[in-house]
Image 1 (spheres, rainbow, N blue to C red):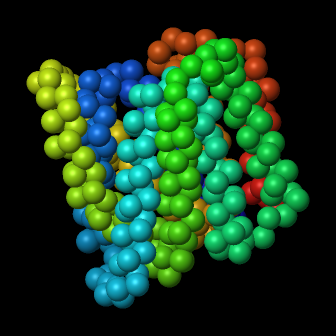
Image 2: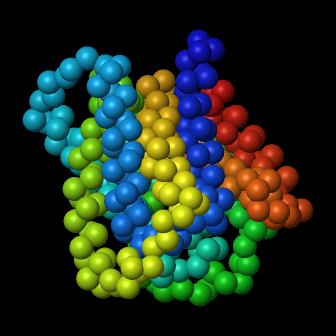
Image 3: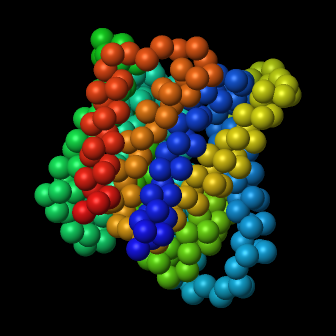
Length: 295
């Protein structure tokens, strides 16, 4: 039982790896055109996951319906990342961070509506408490007066991104339970490669100069490797791993840890300062997560 509870918390590792993207972005991957970066990310992620699957799991024969579900997950994650990149470009850091934490709320709604998961008062209260904690942390790091900046299109795209990632989470559950988190993450990622690749020629046609100035420095290469191997392959596997042992709506609450990890790593590696509200927000987030995961 303790082992299952520990594995159910694997999504916390995913949230930590996504939080680390804040620091890594400062080290160089902003230099790569965004949609091309997304393509490189999934290529590395897919190659890593597929190599692990080939040596660790038996050969499978999936039905057409299962392949369609894998393909649907690929479409969802492609939609999530592309709308996130474009939406972020049309908004600002505070809007992007605050809208990103709406993802767990979409997961909760889809988990109840699409999978028939039971939303207890304890789970709803814990999720709400964790959401407040994440918002308090973010409020201390960003200028909330800038929330009115940006465009409605950008806000809409970021909300669409959150919804797509929620669908990527929820609709994977039948495959995760029937096969494994590793196989589900692998085949969904592999099938997303050509979808992401289709955007690269359009990005090049719109801004060919951006490709000519990409520096092949160690920080840029290291950042791309981190993005592909750790925040894609390992993180997506850990995210799905939690659903082998818990409901999607329970797993969703761990997503709120992402901004906390990002702030802590910024303090540790970038010399940033903690605000007075950080500790309050972190405690609220931890309490909400504990409520949900000890039900």
